Image (cartoon, rainbow, N blue to C red; front, side, top):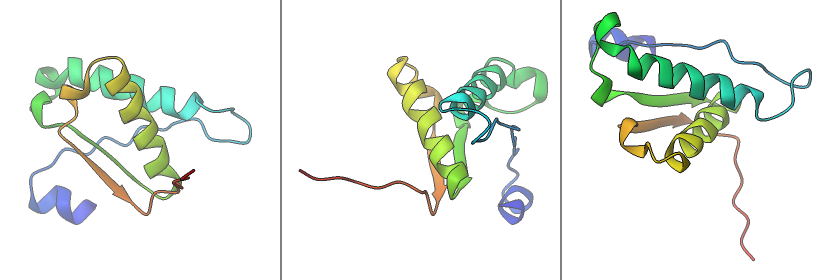
Length: 96
């Protein structure tokens, strides 16, 4: 991820979100969603383009990023998310 940030001129924001088992779901998802919304609203202040924001994570962090993306989308703001970068997300698909 650092290589991409340096070579592609990407701003990386890594929120410190609450993790389990001390914190119940969706605490971490809420933290990431709140951080994303704050950074989107303050992109000009921090010098980056809000229209190019993505969410990403690895393993359990990818699950948290996906959860935040779903909540942002359900709130009617899916246009805020340009892309998802999910590396080895810990998710399962169940088919009936």
